[in-house]
Length: 320
Image (cartoon, rainbow, N blue to C red):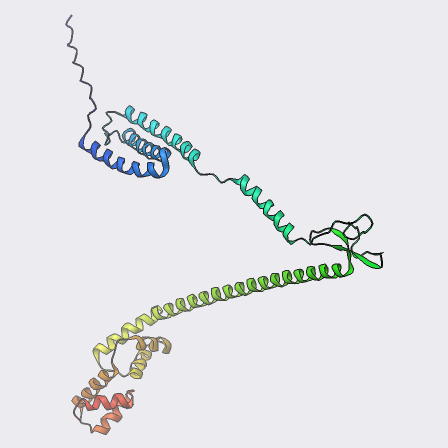
């Protein structure tokens, strides 16, 4: 029995950095350093993880050696998973190092400032004596009672408590409250009026913009013309290439060709023509056909639809 020779095992490929590897590594280092300085280790780890994951996926999916020079797909898969794990870790580091707002301090400062403001603006309430009910609590607003020939009125003070006040103090507090309420109402009314005016101006501007857009669209559509108008324009240009016409004469010719007056006028108004030049051509054509006096030729051109100025110009160019 003859034993077949055993093929020699192929040597394993060893990883060796290529020129591309050093170039990409240098560029990556230049990118990572600024991010590390600005965002810390978490940001640097994020960049490295992202590059590793994309490089591994490239090798895994396309079965080709990447810039790192991974020898096979298994290496690409390991590198992609490692890059993904690095991304997850970078998110944790970035979240842990992000600046936080001291909400407790902000919460404590607000009530303290409000309390100090309330103390500064509150109407001073003298300490009541044992027998004088002034500045003591009461239960019914506008209720009255007498004390030593003084009239005390149950009034709500600036601290929103009902207390007994002397009549002058009560009147003063009520006047201040009425003035404050009036100022608040006037401010609210002014803000409402300003908001309504702004809304009206905004609506007017939007309507004007919509009207302008519709007008421009209609003008563009009118300028483009219908199929019949565009055909009339082509016919007008063809007639002018053949012989001379006045404006009204060309419109009449197009109407003779069964174009509507509107389509014929639209076409003639847009054809590229100098009516003075047309008057010169028409005058020369008449002189080639028969003899005319100057006045007679001018009348003939006016009869053909040229304006007196155009007829004068056309005849003058013939030498008459």
